[in-house]
Length: 168
Image 1 (cartoon, helix red, strand yellow):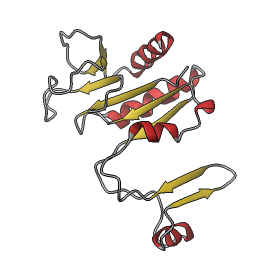
Image 2 (cartoon, one colour; image 1 turned 180 degrees about the vertical axis):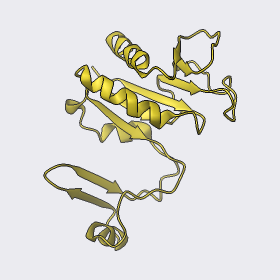
Image 3 (cartoon, helix red, strand yellow; image 1 turned 180 degrees about the horizontal axis):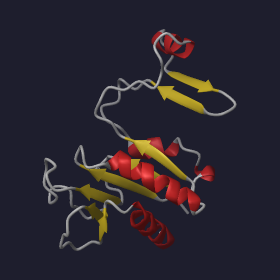
């Protein structure tokens, strides 16, 4: 059995991170250990300039792992990769420690997803709907072929995810 993968996707400004910050603790309180893969369009660096790991990575190390007794992180340089490979990223996660992997973003990926949509945000809902959408979380009443969840009610979103996991 493979690990369930669920994307939370939508236009910029819809509150993907905010909703996940609320949903993840609810899932955790139900005994569900969630992993997260976050997509960003921005240049990002999880390392701190001036720290040893940063200096060694900048010196040419293609992979740098920083580890302490509380956590570890692996940074990989991928300038030759034309795009992000979601299946590869998923394969890097420790599946034995998780019940689900949530993905923030990746709206073009062919994976199950809950779309977030708010009135007044640039971009229409129809552009986000595809055969992989299992629900929409919105602040509007919408007539769609998938369940519409209240984006402002993280408990109902978490309950939906738990129900969906039971069907996987």
